[in-house]
Image (tube, rainbow, N blue to C red; front, top):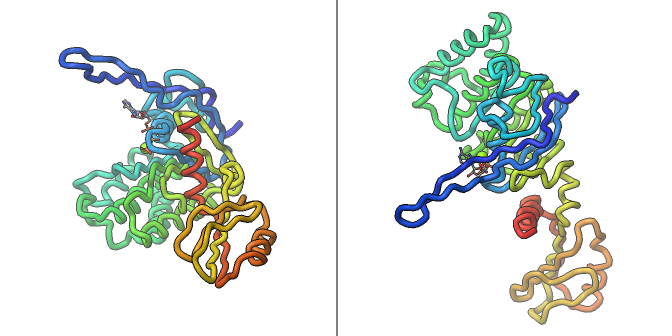
Length: 319
Ligand SMILES: Nc1ncnc2c1ncn2[C@@H]1O[C@H](COP(=O)(O)OP(=O)(O)OP(=O)(O)O)[C@@H](O)[C@H]1O
Ligand SMILES: [Mg+2]
């Protein structure tokens, strides 16, 4: 059995909107709409999708905060909504947008509370706290009240709090949101360590695709509450029909280049951009261009995963 299993999970919300001066209308939003997937122990899975796709709703159901409208859900053998307390010992959660720490207390006190709530044995607690202090560089921050911490410091504090009780699964909902590049790198390095060394299963929601590229062997794209892609990041390039770009500098500005297998997507003076399928060789296109046009320079650009995903989101929205 997998560590996390969802079968045809649905969750809708009823929203009341004003329609005219007195009338109110009820509308149902299907935030999660027939979601099925499973995640094995030790995986690090990226969970991505456009705003409103249902990512946070999924994570809330996986922690037991929200109850599914229908479907079957198991995390570490437990039905989250029914046995929320039992599940709490097996999972850790970090919501980038809000903290689980006590706002007015120093970090140290929040950790101490976690120790008592989860009844973490002393030796385990010391070892885990020491490891987090070292890897997240928390040493100088333990006695600072949480409200005085910067966003990046607080996020590191939250990560430690989520892991002190050795959870089997760590859910992260936008853990790098608003962080600077140095803090992001530190958080990613830490998560890699937690996943590969500790073997903690990680489900990571993010809008920063670098997080995914650096951490996740598997990525799930969801939209309108359904999985639209589940596989490797490389596979996403293929599924998203990604393209490489040949950047051509002509000796002088001229009409758009016409060659088989590529199409001009942009022209700026003597420079022209030609797109062609990423899996195709650039050689015949380069040869054809060079044979027919006087050239000053040429280069090939690899597809950016952002473009692939943007196209995928757009296609889902249209389809
Ligand atoms: N408590 C709620 N009441 C009503 N509607 C809700 C509630 N929570 C979520 N929704 C709606 O459900 C849909 C999915 O929301 P969700 O927060 O899961 O999206 P998301 O994928 O996390 O988006 P984002 O990338 O913006 O964080 C949205 O249309 C949202 O408005
Ligand atoms: Mg969200």
